[in-house]
Length: 185
Image (tube, rainbow, N blue to C red):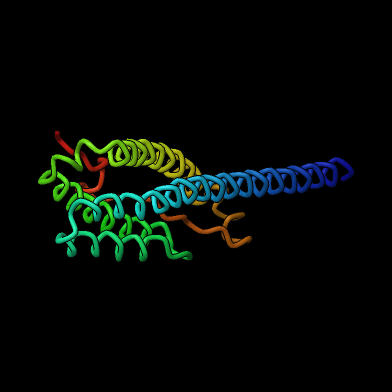
């Protein structure tokens, strides 16, 4: 009879230890996802900060291209607004990327602008930032995949449900926005 109680106690202790380890692993993954999103947010903010300078540089050369300049400014304002989910942010960034593509297309018509050092530097910085956003997106999505897999797999699904862990959204862009805007000189 004594061995029976010892076996039951060992099983209970094992289950409690497993629950603690599973909970801690889920918290660790959730924190990694949040950290990765904050890193993307930093890069997106950097991108948003570069755009007004780019618009002003283009405006100096292409004053009658008001529609393209306003589209970029409007898209930047929407994309820079805080509080968006990853899916909403991705959609906003897609609109911004398309507007930037139109702005760069406008720049093609102005040889002096294409040769302007400030414009070239801003374009290079924007391209570098796009690369960092892409790297951040890959890191974020990998962590989201790990968390979502852990939340949905047996037996961790029980701990996830008990403590309110939920699936996270991926940060995905559409095909038109998968590459940084390019300008051919």
